[in-house]
Image (cartoon, rainbow, N blue to C red; front, side, top):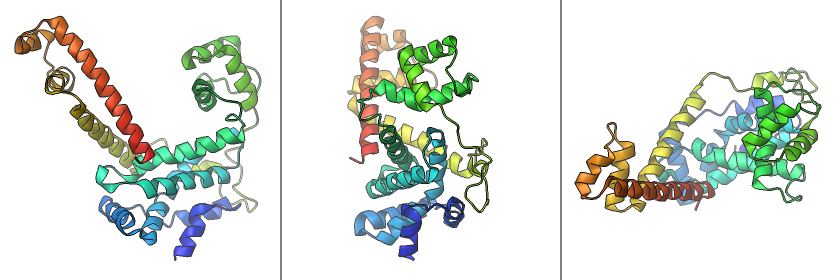
Length: 294
């Protein structure tokens, strides 16, 4: 069984429809099952447990990979790279952090796919800046919202709007648009030579399915946990002011807190601003550590 799992996990072959049928056989895990398997891997290096965790999330990898199908690269390769990210996330996943594997794994899967796309387009070798990478991965989305779906050059107004939204030059927008212009694979094209299934069958449903609801709920818990932990970076006065001003259902006024601490309203405002900046840094650092598995 371990060998079969390994074959499915690492590289979907040219027959994508067969691969997709195969991964549908693996059921989603209950939270308790997932935690038990994660601990078996973490504590005992149980490879069977690791494989079960990976295989139960292969459909998530496919859905994420399908979101990047517009970059002119074979979907099978995107899925393979995403699977590598999934395996990395499972190896680094800590079940005691309190959130589900799907929430943690999404970062790794997306990062692996994006890195592959960037290398494939030789953008890394060109010394791409962060803003250019943002342009690369958001241009098609913005064009779709603006109904600018043709393969040719965009109108000047559209170029200007995208450049403004993404804080890049109009020249960068024009250049990237020309690089990315090309016929997308038809969504109604068959998945393989057998003509079995269509790409449309694997598009994400716009409605909230069970998996999406789980992910949304997990992300909400994850953000709350990040905030709760980050609050410990504040001293007692800062924490009380932030909670009173921003986290309570009936927030306190600057006037209220100025009486509590015997200082001016302006002083309370200054403490709140600095405390909020500290809180943001703490949340950002904790999130980055979780993504990197530190």
